Length: 325
Image 1: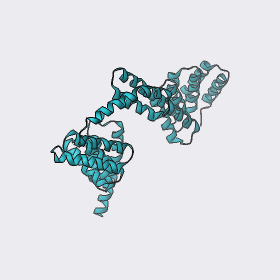
Image 2: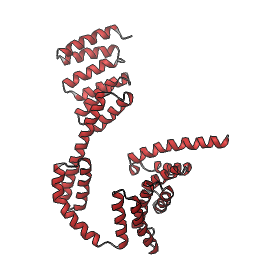
Image 3: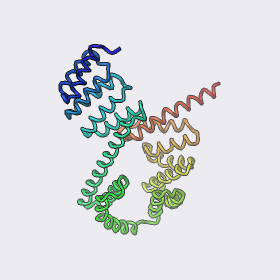
Image 4: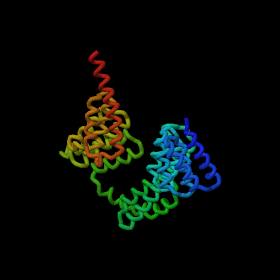
C-alpha cells in the first residue's frame, strides 16, 4: 500500500505541476521520495518537471532512479531516454529505449522515439562521412574519398550534398581506376573481377574468378601470398553465401594456417562447422576468438562469438548426454 503521507505530498506536487510551478513541484516530489523512494511515479513526475525546466542532467538522474524503483515501470525508460536525446547522447538513448521495449515491446512512445533517434544517428553518420570525404578530397586521397562517399550514399541515397560531392570525386576516381586496372596482372584481374561479382551477389561467378586467381598463384608458388590469402578469404565468403560449408572450411583453414589470429576466418569457419554439425570444432574456433584482445575482435564480433559459444556449448552438452545414456 502506498504511504498516505507521501501520496498527499505527491498530490500537492501535481497541483504545482499543473500550475506551471515546476521548482515547487520538484520540492514536493523530493519530499515524497524521502518518505518512500520505491514509488516510481514520484521519480517520473520529478523527471517531467526537470524536462520543463530543461534541466536534462537532473531529468536523467530522476529517470534512472525511477527505473531503480521499478524496472517494469516503462515510463521511467521514456523519461531517461528523453533526457539522453536532449543531451545528444544518442547511443545510450537507444540502449535505454531497447531496455524499455524489452519490457513492453508495443509501447508507442518508446517505438516512436527509437525511430526518431535512429534517424538522427543516421543523419549524423551521413554528415560525418561527407565531412571526412571532403577532407580526404582536399588531401588528394581520391580512392578513400570515394569509398567514404559510397558509405554515405548507402545510408542516404539521393542526398543532394552527397550527389554534389560525387560529381567532383567520381570522374577523378574513374580515371584513377582505369589506370590502376590497366596495370593489373592477369591474376590480379581475376581477383578484381571476383570482388565485383561478390558485390553484385553473383557468388558462383565470383568463385570462378577467385579459383582462377588461386590456381595460378599456387602454380607459381605463391599460394600463401597476401593476394592468395585475400582470394581464399573472399572465396570462403562466397561459399558461405551458397551454403558450400566444406568449401568455406577449406578456404578459411588455408587463411588460418598462415594467419592463426585472423578473426574473420575463424568466425566464418566456426559458422561453417556449425552448418555441417561439427559443433566441437565450431566451439573451438569461437573460443579462440574470445581469448583475443577485445579491441582486436571488436564489439560486433565479440557479441556474435559470445552468443555462438553459449549456443554451441549447450548443443555439445546435449550430445554428451545423449551419447552417455
